[in-house]
Image (cartoon, rainbow, N blue to C red):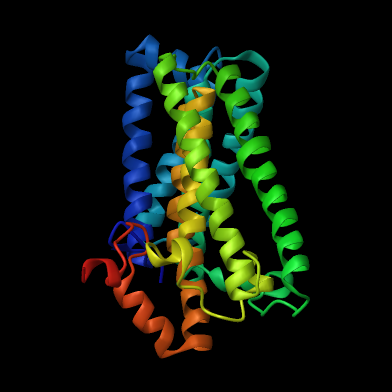
Length: 311
């Protein structure tokens, strides 16, 4: 069962979420007619009465019913929330109005869908992430040169997608939805410095995986040997640390708080969903060697190697 910030995500947790969602929705609908600023930020020029007539029963009341144990209401609130989120995204993009409303509904839609899955299945079926072409398997023994070439291509694809294309799109959406916050030049410079350092760490980690482990960063081309040298002496997941730091750095360079948030959300998703699956696979393949390594090297916070601490 996934754990976020020490909270185990269970059906009870999902019902608590829907209770909070119902409360937040009710408070928002109270604030809308009382505050023009709230109305403009979240609804723009949309007519309040018709939207309220639909949203209060289908979002607020349905969320409360789910929290009270009426599971059938899931089939009302989750689709409605997703539909409203999509409509608000289109509206905010076309008009540059109600950006905060669109953003909040996107978050609510994602949380509602995940919570609905937990209530229906009793868990989040994360195993699908490592099935088919993404299943954990060892890399072909094709030689260090070809492994380095594969690692380079994989790195270019993932960095191009997650550190260029997606951040640029998120930044453009942030600007179009009028959610941009001006940042000082120093923040952008710090982002550039962080990006250089994090990229160097990412390259060092990827090369170590190919040369020392005879594998690539992809789960479908895992290393044949447990890599505990290079940056792996200091932290168990240097590539993840590098990737998250790169994402934050790109956000700082773009002056986009939404890109920074996207990167931090990615770190939570990776730590909650991907890391447990990856470490279970490593333990099944390397046994006590990985268990000993995990016990002495932290996942996120770099530590001095044992040999250095003995000096």
